[in-house]
Image (cartoon, rainbow, N blue to C red):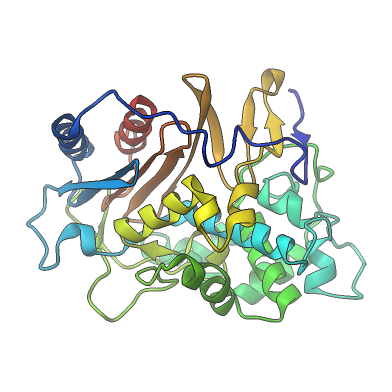
Length: 361
């Protein structure tokens, strides 16, 4: 197996500046609306929303197999699961841009200054690129989470346990030598950034990301305002409790409305119009290549696939009862948000439907 080529920090440029956008001419408004509606139907979930931004114009379609909720589906907050990592990565590039961290310091040096015995040499860059040599979940996670596996597994693993397990964990592989997707690693990154800035994670995200980008309908935990969407199990009928990320906030805690998520993606499409311009541009740059011939390309925030000779950026996420897909194409000025309230199942159509739609636009 070919090991990853870690190019941090930003050794390769992105595909172009804000102005290099070719008009998307494949579909008119009526056709786009029909395709979004077809995508909603194809997902076959209790609640589903597909929200598109094309050349600055938004189009939203929603529906579902469940009765319509009291609040329009497109106004509810949805759990975005691992798509939270795109926010965490943007926060990291913002903090690097302002000199709060470099990305090359070890997480252990921030979490436990002066403690060197058996601590991991993994850097912040390794953590965000899933090359820190960590497993997907901490050792002992499943045993601790088992009593609440169908209701609240992550909530049984608080921040203190995530950090202490990381500090005690001996990696089997040297950081930077293998790519392995890790919720554990990105969770540790969140705690390391909080330690570096002496700011609680929730306050750090709100102050450095949500407020500057105008994301007033995005939250880091379940709310009491009645606007959180209700997730469902694989059968599409059984309600599940709201997701509690426990100590894994940076890896999967965010919940947001489709319009807030489109605002986030539009900032990535047109970074020059945002107060976080440099940080947003940095999230586009390839920093990791892996797989046979290093054909799999990643940025700090996004999976990056070639489409029509240009780049498509995307990330998906899932919780116990909801799913999300975020993606954008700078070459056509297109962004797509898709959310639904059903747990991932075998041969699930959600991600393929969203991915395929964005690739075609």
